[in-house]
Structure formats: structure tokens, C-alpha cells
Image (cartoon, rainbow, N blue to C red):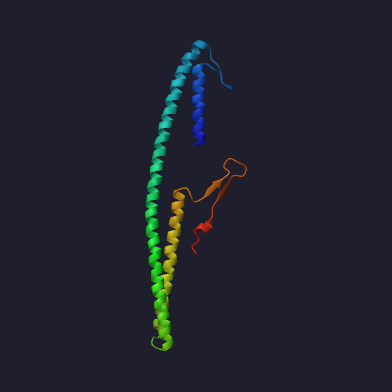
Length: 175
């Protein structure tokens, strides 16, 4: 964007200098009768080109802003659904853990067979695996939201010798 603005500043400065008859360093000054015709034609052409490019850039900017807003809205909805999935999976693990602990107590008391206890343990492992999958979906969606909103990485010292990019993966660790 800075290059874009600099280009237009240079174009506008050139047009202004030509219109005022001022010679910029590195430019060639034409003879007065020819200069006015060339300046008018060139200035008109440059101005029309600059205006067309500016309109095109404004349209692209509005389109990208709308697209980013739509993407963020969609990802937020997905993130809410993923968070609900994590909560449901945690509740399932808690219920299955209680069932497994009860099955172990019944096994010790001789009221339940080893096969039934192993089946209950298998259900617990399945629920724990589903919880991990739901957490992975949630964290992936969170990373996508941060990417879409421009907060996945942070920059410091832009334009300096100390310019750096920072990504903290610990922000995604759930404890």
C-alpha cells in the first residue's frame, strides 16, 4: 500500500510540476510552445490513468474488506460450533469415566465380567479420542480466525533493523 501511495504521489507531483512549468531534478524541460501542448496532453492522460487506477484500487479494497468480514463471520460461527463440540465431548468423557469407575467397582465385587469392564474401558477411550479430535478442530478453527483477522502473528519494529515477526504457539495450548 505504501508503494501504491508513493507512486501516486510521484505522478501527482510530476503533473503539478509540469502544469506550473517547474523542472524537477532528472526531468527534461521542453520548449514553451510545444511544452504546453505536451503538458496538457500528458497531464490529462496521466490524470485519467491515475484516477482509473485509484478507482480500481478502491473497488478492490472494498471487495477484500467485505470478503474478510464474511470469512471472519463464517469462522466465528464454526468456532462456536467447535466449542460446543468440545463441551459435549468433555461431558461424554465425564459420564463414561463415572461408568468405567462403577464397572471397576463391580468387577472387584465380582458382579461384572472382565469382558464387560473392557467394553466399558473401550467406550471411555473412544470418548477420550473424540474429545481430543474436538479440541483439535477447535484449535484449528481458532488459528483460522486469528489468521483471517490478522492476529495470528505480530510484527514489531517494522522498517527498522530490529524488524521481527512473532508467533506464539503457546497461545494454542489448552491446559
